[in-house]
Amino acid sequence: MSYTGKWIHIDLYTGKHEIGETDKKLLEKYIGGKGLGFALLEKIAPNPEPFSPENPIILVNGPFTGTKVQTSARTALVTKSPLTGSILDSHCGGNFGPRLKAAGYDYLIITGK
Image 1: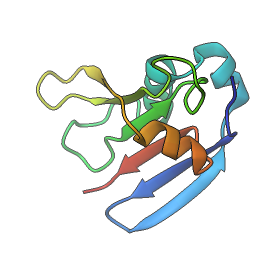
Image 2: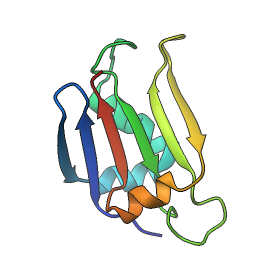
Image 3: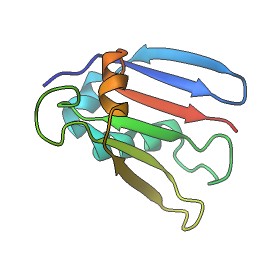
Image 4: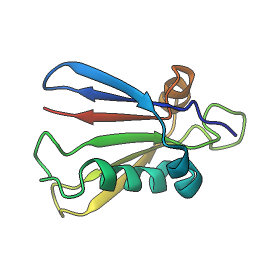
């Protein structure tokens, strides 16, 4: 079980990116995946308009991503729904999560249009 200790934010509007340190208190409190994604959305953009460039798409790994634990390759996507206005999450498997972790990041935040 491990975290990389870093995150990356990519702004599609400006084309710029920012790399930062993962808040260890958030990791301890929310563990990873959906819970961490919800906490990050609340912290980054507490009430974004669903179609605004400020509404982030957050892709979050769990602590076991990149290990041999079964189903650990799952990645959670968290954002505000344009249909309902509520916070939503979706999960995907495959190589994205392990590759994000191998690149050195616990989560990816995408903003802009």
